[in-house]
Length: 481
Image 1 (cartoon, rainbow, N blue to C red):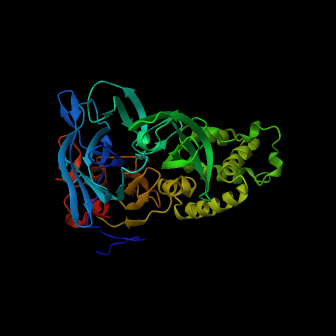
Image 2 (cartoon, rainbow, N blue to C red; image 1 turned 30 degrees about the vertical axis):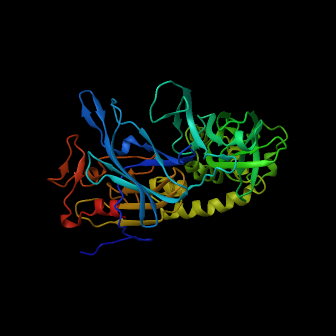
Image 3 (cartoon, helix red, strand yellow; image 1 turned 90 degrees about the vertical axis):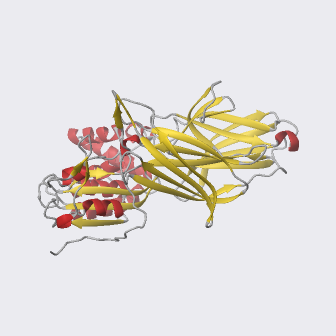
C-alpha cells in the first residue's frame, strides 16, 4: 500500500520522548567547605499518571540526575519522588543540593513515570559553571521566586530561615505583578570591610539586542561573611517583552566589584498604549485609515493567535460591533506597539505570512489562519518538521507537527497532533499537544483509533497502546518523531 507523507524534515531520534513535562532549573552557591548546586524540579501534573488512593490521587516518578565532564560522571543520583496526595492531578516540585568542586559540567536529568510505561523525558543542560574563589568578593547565582516566607521548620525548600518557592519558567504573566529575587554576597567582611551598595536593574532587551534600564533600585548593606539579599520588585508597570535582571555590588566609591544577571519574560498587554484615549492622536494620518471593512476584519482576525485571554475577548467585541473607527484603532494600536517607528512595515511583513497560511490551511469555514493548524502556525511559527498520514485503514487522516525548540513555554521537543475525523477537505482539528497551555488529551490514541478492537486500556479507560498491525503507526510517529 502506498503511503502519503508530507515531510519537511523527518528525523527519528535515539532518545524516545513522550508526554511527561517538567522544568529543570539550577543555581550555584558558595559554602565553607565546597560550592554546591541547587537543582529545582517542577513537574507538570497533567502529563504524569495519578493513581487513586481512596478519595485522593498520587503520582510517582523516578528521577536520575547526572553531572558529567566529558565522558566522566562526577555526580550521580537516582531516587523515587511522590507527589502530594490531592483530589486530582496537580503540579509538584522537588529540590536537591549537590556539592561540586569548581568546574564546568553538563547536567542531565531523566524523569520516568513509574505508573505508566515509557512515559519519560530527558533534559540536558550544558555549561553549568561552578566557579568561586576565596580571594575576592563574589555573588551566587540569582534565584527567581514566586513567594518567600520566614519559617523555623527545616526542609529542602528552606534556607537561612526562609521558605522559598521558585519560579519554574522565568515567565511572569499579567496576573503576576511582583518579582522576588534571592542572591548571596560572599566575602564583603574580608575584602570590603565596610558598608557597600547592592544595585539592581531591570533592563528591557529590544529587538536590536540593546538594553534599556527600565527600573533601578539601591540598598546599602553591612559587610558580612555571607550576606543574604532578597528583594521583592513591583513589575506591574513593565510591559510585555524580554527583560534582564542585573544585580551589582559596588564599594563606597561606586566601583563595580561583581555582578550577576538572569533573563525573564513578561506578558502585560494591558499596558499597551490606547491611542483612542490620546487626544493628540489622529487615526486619519496612519496606514489603516483607507482600509476597507473587509481589510480591517481580515487584519484583526489575523492577529488573534498572538493575543491571550481578555485581549482576545476585546478583539472579538470590536469585530462583532463592526465599529470602523474602533477597528482601525485596534489594528493600528497593535502594530504601533510592536514597531513604533514603522508599524506599517511590521504589519506588511506579518500579513505576508498570514495570507500564505490562509491559503495553505483553507478549510471552508473561515480564514485558513482560524483553523487549528493555521492558528497554531501563526501562534508558534513553522514547525521544525511535520508528517501527514492520509491512508491508514483504521484512522482518519492525521498530521503531527514537531518543534525542536519552543521558547514560548521554555520547552523542547514539543508535538501537536491534528486529525480529520469528518474527512472534509482540510478540516483538521487539534487532538493532542505536549505544549503547556494547549489541548492535552491523555486518551488521544483511543480517540484516533476508536474503531480498533482489543486495544490495551488502563484502569481509568485510557488507551495505552494499539497493535501496530495494519500500519497503525501514530504512536510510533508521535513518540519517535
